[in-house]
Image 1: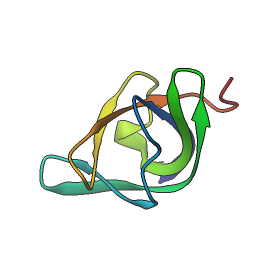
Image 2: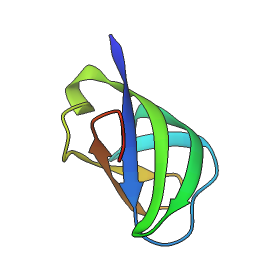
Image 3: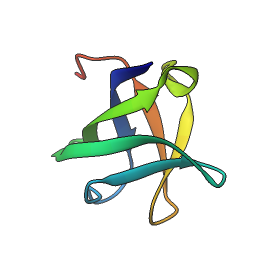
Length: 72
């Protein structure tokens, strides 16, 4: 019960890794790329966290927002 979603965040692109909600792993970030407004990435996230606009946390503590695929 997971979905492919895009992620968007500010700053430099992170490395692949787990996505967190508090102390629970809710997905996995795969590839990332630099965009004009920060970075974009592809992730597999649990259905509960797959709604566009949902905030998840990267392993380094930064926030990212779920966006629908295709990411433009």
